[in-house]
Amino acid sequence: MKLNQVKYKKLIWPILIGLLIWFLSPFKPAGVSLNAWHMFAIFVATIIGCISQPLPIAGVAIIAMTVCVLFNVTSIDDAMTGFGDSTVWMIAMAYFLSRGFVNTGLGRRVALIFVRLFGKRTLGLAYALIGVDLVTSPATPSNTARAGGIVFPIIESVSAAYDSNPKDGTQRKVGSFLIFSAFHGNVATSGLFMTAMAPNLVAVALAKSMHINITWMGWFLAGVVPGLISLILVPLIIYKMYPPEVKDTPNAKAWADAELVKMGRMSLPEKLMGVIFLLALVLWMLSSFIGLDATLVAFMAVSLLLLSGVLSVSDILHETGAWNTLVWFSILIFMAGQLNTLGFIPWLSKAIGNSLHGVGWGVVLAVLMLVYFYAHYLFAGATAHVSAMYGAFLGVAVSAGAPPMLAALLLGFDGAIFSSTTHYANGPSSIMFGPGYVTQSDWWKMNFVLGIFYLIVWGGIGALWMKVIGIW
Image 1 (cartoon, rainbow, N blue to C red):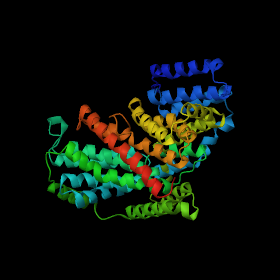
Image 2: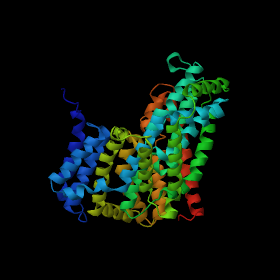
Image 3: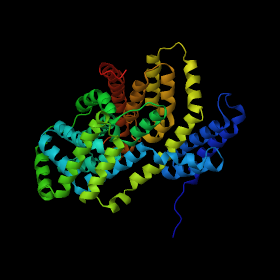
Image 4: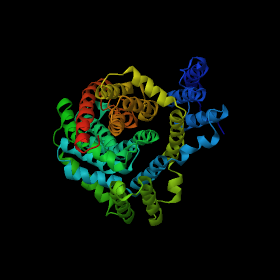
């Protein structure tokens, strides 16, 4: 066998910065214990490793956990606690649910139905693709899977039907508009549902470690108004900024009809998948009212998929995305929790809070949202960014007097909308940008405008909406 590739050069910065912080312990603040400082050093090195990725993120996390225990920063029992976190397992179960959409073909069928119903005009086609993302997002915590596995193949097929291809310079016919609209639909749905992308659940877990418990329904109710505003208005804004050359797409309906004929009648596995998904969705909505844990709902849905034969145990064992996420997410939750338990996050929050003494919490929260949003230009992916900054920023906001649930949710939404920055901001942006339908300069310029729109809608209107429904 051959040795697996390890990008050793990309280990240099995590190790150097981690060691630098570690050996600066004689100069650490008086309010921070030695163990808390060492945990901070390992955590910073881990986040940098997650960004540079000398190994996949799960490998980086395993090494970091090993270092924590090896150097007596924490015990092995404490290190294992993250693997028992219910949020981690909710993510894994949601990945298994999304596998059901792919295996049965239900996701593709839903996409084709939306194209048939709304695809007579290019703008309607954009809304159809966004509708597919909206329908599948509550049970698909990988927004990359939605973008790459369901939506993008449909865009490529429709674009080909209208001879819209970046290879021959015809991408602006329909392809560019559909790509950019679908990407921003993914941004909005990622903020609308707690289970629509993994970084949301990272934020929920970090908030929980600070005794702020965000429920599935609580997240949805808080995000429903800014989410719907974004889903409705953003395609129209893109249509004005970046109009397609072909405005009418009557052939899209015929193409979708032909593809649905090839698929045949809805199969029993598809029907079962649809019923179980709807059951899970209803129970998630009712969970906070009937005292049913959201993670238990996810386990129930997967159990039904196994009992009905829609999924096999082999499907679950081979769902590498779920197991990969379970490993790195569990370890990052453990490390973030230790930073809080050992006193580093409380000290940091208090220190920054003291420096902002006399500044109103509204101003502090607004500044934190702006810094958190625009800092994403430095990150290639949402998970590392949320893991690195969410907990600290939430602590600062609460120390400044911001209502804890308001701060937790606004910063949580920020973790979705800051993907509207660069072409490397997250998985969906890389998928949609990669084929070349939208140039890098257009991507950055239009995203800068839409980023301001998102901050106003999710930060401003979102905060007002949460006041109306009594969250703060």
